[in-house]
Length: 192
Image 1 (cartoon, helix red, strand yellow):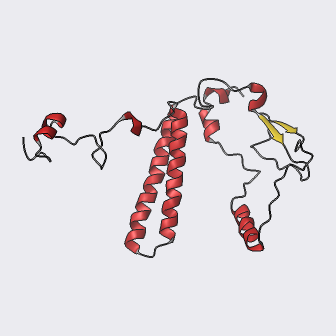
Image 2 (cartoon, rainbow, N blue to C red):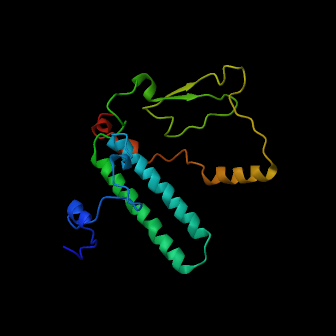
Image 3 (cartoon, helix red, strand yellow):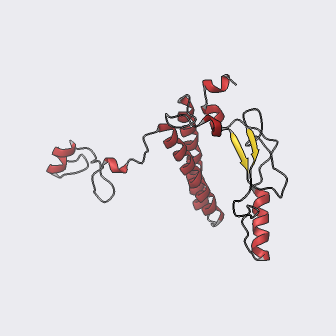
């Protein structure tokens, strides 16, 4: 049975003429290659996040090259990360309920509580900390008598960069989109 991709008689016998399950260094596949915590919904969320990080890396690579062929290839690979994210999202939401992850419930007295730990600025409110499902508690900011804020010294250039990033990443407190957590609550959402 020669000509099936490998002429080694041992390979022919062990793998029936097919490709062996090894990595590029010839090391046989083992379960150690599986990266899971055995909770499918948490694993899928981890996969979605990994695809998002990979997409950002491709964006950055695209931004540092002017070669059209390389930009096109990177654009294809970046777009595949989007396709993978969509597939993982669909798989995640086919499992109902999928939030919260795991089997044990959280402590209900803390699951929907937002603790405000600083007192010198007005509270920023939004769907992440207000609404009928949230209890808002203004707590003491720091046990050491401080104001609860971190204090750092940055150069004016760094401050300008940080300010620009804060503007770019600012959330809209009036937005209340459906999230994976909402969609994953399944039947629990219907009982609100």
